[in-house]
Length: 248
Ligand SMILES: C[S@@+](CC[C@H](N)C(=O)[O-])C[C@H]1O[C@@H](n2cnc3c(N)ncnc32)[C@H](O)[C@@H]1O
Image (cartoon, rainbow, N blue to C red; front, side, top):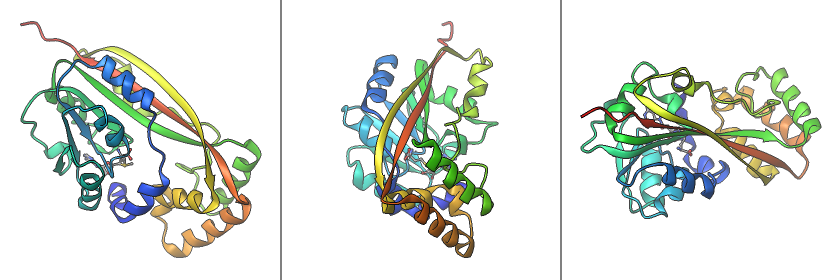
């Protein structure tokens, strides 16, 4: 399963993956009622750190032991539950459940029921993903061509458009248990030197799952196309919804 490949790359993940905008955390916490917060698939804590700094009562579910160890070290004040969300039994109802770049790993047949059960009435659901785009279109096309020649096409890091995630379609097509849908986007750029950029490539599962004898020649070709570094455009797409208050 692709999700387990993350644990093997904890250090790379931590140093190379982008974080999340402060403004996103501010707006999510404004949207949510006050109360305890649950994060699903916290990884090494890239989003956790941004939220935990706001002094909230935060519980994180993370199945990978190596990720969970890094998470506990990076974010000492949060409660860490090691396991998949599907096996997690909440001991309270949460005012907010958020998931950064991880909701697609949770069983699509069960995740909406599980989110609904974990949330307090009117509790908020915030699902977000970072999309990566090489800012310069000519360089992006060159890198995409290298990917393509090495058999990496879907989920390549060098796609033309940051594609909006399909994983929220369930909410967009209407589940009466959730209401107040809102979609927001946050865009920023970041300069990556060549070494950090190649580390970023190494964290992407489409490349990571390749056997080394296929991955390394691909990385070497990307490196020679890169020069000193690369400007990345990151777009964080956020979908917000609220648990429909049940009549009481
Ligand atoms: C792409 S990483 C995102 C990590 C972190 N949220 C971030 O944004 O950097 C996906 C994370 O989801 C976790 N994960 C995979 N399957 C999961 C599941 N069924 N329940 C909860 N987390 C899961 C993985 O272990 C991994 O840490």
